[in-house]
View 1 (cartoon, rainbow, N blue to C red):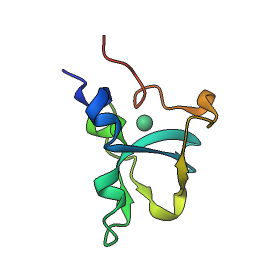
View 2: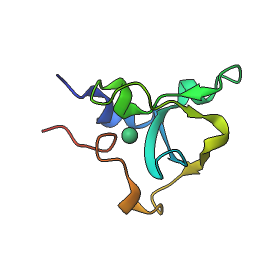
View 3: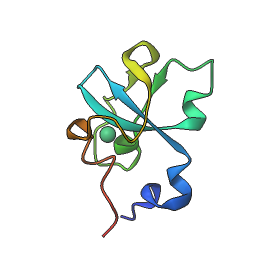
View 4: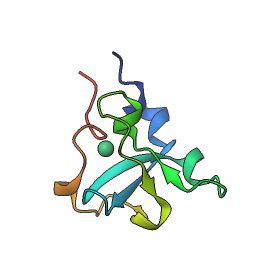
Length: 84
Ligand SMILES: [Zn+2]
C-alpha cells in the first residue's frame, strides 16, 4: 500500500497534536480539525489502514497544534513514517 500522506503537499494537510489517549503525537487532517461540528478525529495512522479504527480521539483529548519543537520521542511511528 502506498503512503501518500507523508509527502510534501500532504505535509500541509496535517497538523500534529498530542493525544492524551495514548500519550503520542499523531498527525490529524486539518480538514477534520477545522470542522467544528465534529467531535472525534482519527489520526493519520488509522487512515493508512495500519491501525484498527478504535483510535478515535475526542477534541478535548488533543493538545493544541505542535510544531517542530515538540517532543519527537512521542511521535507515533506510523503517522510519521517516511515512504521507502
Ligand atoms: Zn498515529
